[in-house]
Image (cartoon, rainbow over all chains, first blue to last red; front, side, top):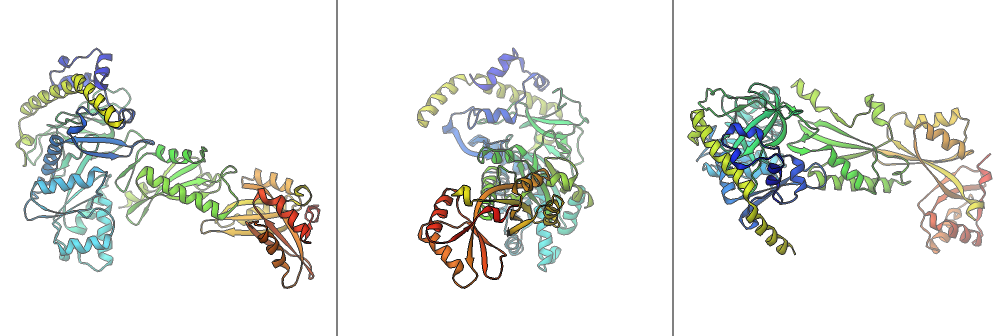
Length: 404
Length: 47
Length: 147
C-alpha cells in the first residue's frame, strides 16, 4: 500500500476531507526517517520512466536521502530559481559566477538552471580553487556571485591577499547566499567587501533544493508558497503556531510530481509573517533560520549528522570508540575534526597501524559525509580534560561568529 | 517580478494553493494502480 | 621457549602533548618502578612509548589506573659482543628464516656487551627464539630485567 494512503487511513482521512489550506493541519507529517525507510525511490509517485533527475543528500546514518524530479518538476525548479534571480533583475548581460558545489547536491545545479532560465551567462565554477575562481571572476566580468556566505568571504580575503582591489577589479553587484546560517556581521562584511546586495537563498533538497524561498532587496525572505506551503509548528506537540511565533518549519509541496511531500518537517526553527513587503510581494515571509530542532550540523554548507560519524566508527571492526566532533574555523571556512579515543581495544602497537587506522577513518568519513574530515587519535578522556566535561559536539565556530 | 502570483491578493493565492493541495493529496493517496504497475515493473527491471 | 625468554614489554599510547611523557615517568617513579629499557616511536600527532621495566605487572596496573592506553606484549632480548657485526649476526639469522622484525631497540649494557630488544610478529616469536639459539646467539632471560 502506498505510504500516504496508509498514513491517511490510520487517521481515518480521505482526500475529500481536504478542501482548503486550512485542512492541511489535519494531515500527517512526513520526516527524513520516512524517506530513509523508503530508500531509495519508495516515496516517488511516478513511474521511474518519468523521472529525469535524481539528487541525493546526507541521510542521518548509512543511507543518503534521495529525491527525484520529472520534467515538470524541473520546470518548477527552474521557475522558482528564476524568481530568485529576478529578485535582483538578473538576466541577459549578467555573468553569474556559480561557486555552489555541482554534483549530487542540489545547490550547484539549482542556481545553474535559474541563471540560465533568466538568460544570464553562467560560469559553473563549483567549489574550491579559490585563486583560479578569482581570476575567472575578474576576467569574465562576473556581476553575480552564488555561493555559501563563508566561501564568499573566503574569496574576498584571498583576493585582498593576492593584491586585488575588490571594488575596482570586480563587478559583483549581487550575491545569492545560502546553504548555511550567516550572522548579520558576516552579511555586512560581504556587503562591504564586494559592494554587493546580499540576497539570502533558502531551500532543502527534500522540498526541491534551493528556490524554496528567496530574499528580496529589502532583506525579507519570501516563501514561494504557490509551490511550497509553509507552516510553523510546535516541535513537541505538532500543533500549528500562529504567525509571529517561533517553531519548526514544515512544508507541503503542491506542484511536484515525482516526490510530492506532505507536511515535511524541516527541523529548521523560524517564524512566519504574512504582511505585505515593501517590495510588493504578498507571499509569506520567513525569518532567517534561527536554529535546528535536531542535532544536524552545517559544515561549509553541507549537512552533517553526528549519527553519521558514529556510524562510520561503529562500522570499523564493530567497536564504538569514544569520540568527539570538533567544529572550528580555518580562516573563514569551517573545518570538522573527529577526535577518536584510542583505548586498549583499538590500540595496535605500531605507528604504521595507527596511521592506517586514521587514514581509513578519514576515507570512510569522506564517503559517508561527503566532506573532508580530519581524524585525530587521542588518549582517553582527553576532551574531558581539555573541555572540562563530557560532550559529543564542540562547536567553536559560534563564539567566532559573534565577534564578526 | 518573474511571476505576478508573488504579489497577488492573498485570497487569490490561497485559492490556487487549495486547488493544488487537493490535486497533490489525490496524487499521493490514489496512486495505487500506477504504484502496482511501477512496483512490478521496478522489480522486474531490478531483477 | 617463549616462557623462558619472553620479556613483557609495555607499549603506551601518547598524544604529542606537552608534559605527557612527564606524567608517565612520574607515575612510574611514584610506584618505585625502574625503567630498564625504553624506546619512543612518534608520528606528527602521537607517539608510542615502549618500556621494559623491573616489575611489569605493577607498572601495568599503575599506568592503567592512571588512564593510559597500553598494551602488553612479549619481546625478547639478545646479548651480543659490543663490536662491529654484533647486531648483524642477529638480523642475518632472522632474515634467513623469514622472520620479520617489527622493531628493535638497544639496552645500555656494559662496555663489552650490548643487549638488544627485538619485537617480531607474535606468531613468529617461538620460531625466532629457536633459530637464534640454534645459531649460537645468547638470549637474555627476563630475570635480567625484572627484580
